[in-house]
Image (cartoon, rainbow, N blue to C red; front, side, top):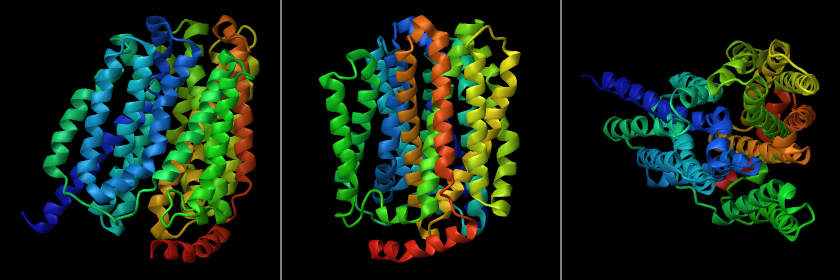
Length: 473
């Protein structure tokens, strides 16, 4: 076999196996959505427990994305990728065997650690395996499969929960992950990157900031908004949030280079992406439960009932991706998030009285078209605003901000739901939570107004370049 053929074979293995790992990771972000009602009944979960089931995974995933990329560059990407898969599988076993909600939440947090070691390192492996002229195609396939997994989460979770049991949404990770580990170590060549320093101070500060804010929001309705626990959590989170940029300015290689935020498009794109994900994750969290509790749908049917919303990505996102080059990101971000807000408000108003499922199809499609327009445009605005050699870390920052948006969104909307009566008054709480999704979407649209046109974005990228070069020197 020639060297060229051997290289092509390696590329296929890299693309296939990194995509398989990414699909597992992306699927588990929302695969529990359709199983939340079953988990609540089996383990006696409260709304607080359910939101931590989602957020524990997202928090550790978000916080360790950049750190895992640094470890992969230093220790070896193949080795780090395999270790991440192994940890993810071990945590999946713990989730499946969890006898109580605290154990399940802890296992989900460990799952997030494994996921963080898989996703950014997978991108590094792709970048090392494919030459520049084929790298865009490979990343496009990788991203498409990952997006499919996110969309399919509620449907897959519903099918497995209804056909077997909710524990099996975790068990299925084990044989797939074990086979992937063997194949990764056998067929993927090792690669490493530049020896970028780890920033433990920055990682600690941003973790404390997010945990403090999320913990206070989650515990507010239970412990009391004026309780020492909640006030102390907010104070601790706020101090860490203020201290994070101050720390990042002092270190030579910061976790998040603050010079990037001199670009309006980068800052606005990240802010819009965070609000978009906050609304999206919150809506998935409640809509899957709404279908089951209001219409008596099983988990699978509930997932299928969300398809008018989630399946729009297949039709709208490719068109939106092409339109970005023609009209720029800002119109797509703003119009898309306004449409998502319209859909969320429409569902909120319609759910207050007697409602039939067909009445929700159109607002679900409106919201789905909106998020499908805005999602690729926010990523393009944030990542494309920086120099080409900063794309990797810019993508990591965008992913981190998006995951954090999902964490805060679920926490805030669950607090709104609980304040409206929780499961004792589900219809009222659901309506207010979906209205909250609409508000978050409008905030994202306002942030999107800060995105500059394509020409200005390129000028912003040039302005950041000297600082980046100095940092890497």
